[in-house]
Image (cartoon, rainbow, N blue to C red; front, side, top):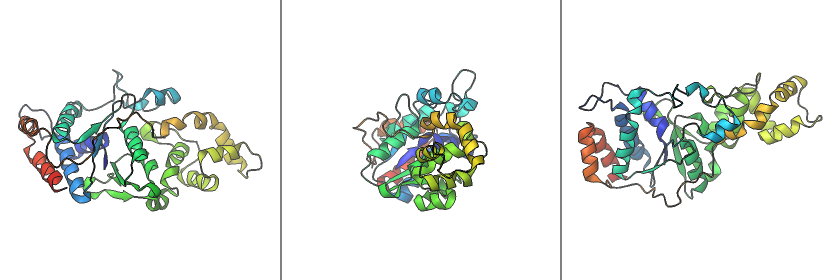
Length: 298
């Protein structure tokens, strides 16, 4: 089980009352929510391995170089990601608590959590559940490799299990084609405009017919390919975008994730005294005990 930790702590921050605070008044709603989310996921799915994947770089240089508008709408005046101060203060606490539990945490300089997840999926020799509320990771769904998404758009307690059959039902394309689909359709959350005049149905139809973006561009270069004149004009006008932005939408599968990452589910805390100190300092006894119980039973 791979946790898209930023996606989950954002969801926890906005889904759990900010009135939950530590004795010093610091909000701990995101910490509490994430711990309870994780306890529920472990209880419901019984993974043998668990990794909390982190954003070491939320806006990697290689994506900005390909497409300067990438996540530009989320850049604060100081150049950092726009984030509520109450959430920003909780991220170090989240990382400290996960480490005290012994849950593997992994972020790679220059890469997003998505890329860590993509790389671990590529390396996996067992079925993988990716837990996220981010549609970008739909591109990892792959029945042949046993990779599916536990999609938390409606909440962790009501997450949806997405495999290739569900991808085709929803979008008309399998997981492996989703990155090309998103590139054609656009994705406002990442600042991707898409191809003007190409919506979801047209994008799915093009990929069904030509197989991939590469196949579509080859058809664009072939006057006898059967592309209609109106669609051909739209794609020709968007060609610079299609040629340059592909690296932005594709999750890396070769990020330098440590090969010795110990992802085994910890049955007991790695640092019990440290965990107890953190639970007392941040008023986390309830969620810490619930996660400890879930891990012990896992």
